[in-house]
Image 1 (cartoon, rainbow, N blue to C red):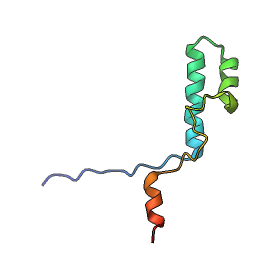
Image 2: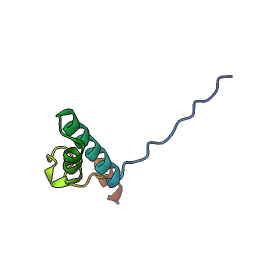
Image 3: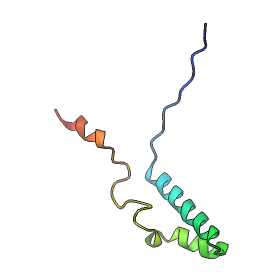
Image 4: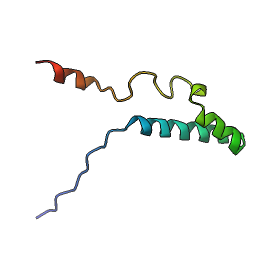
Length: 72
C-alpha cells in the first residue's frame, strides 16, 4: 500500500507579511544598485519611497472569490 502524501494548507499572507516582503525587496535592490547599508535601510523603511506597483494601496487581503460568499 502506498503512503499518503502529507499536504499543508497555504497560510494566507497578512499585511505584515506584505510589508516585510516589500521592505526586503527594496533593501536588496538598493544594495545591488550600490548603496551603502544605511541608505538602503532608509529607503526600505520609508514606505512613501516605494513605487505603487510594489505594494498596492488597496486591500492586499482582497480575494475576488470572497465576494460570492455574501450572496444569500
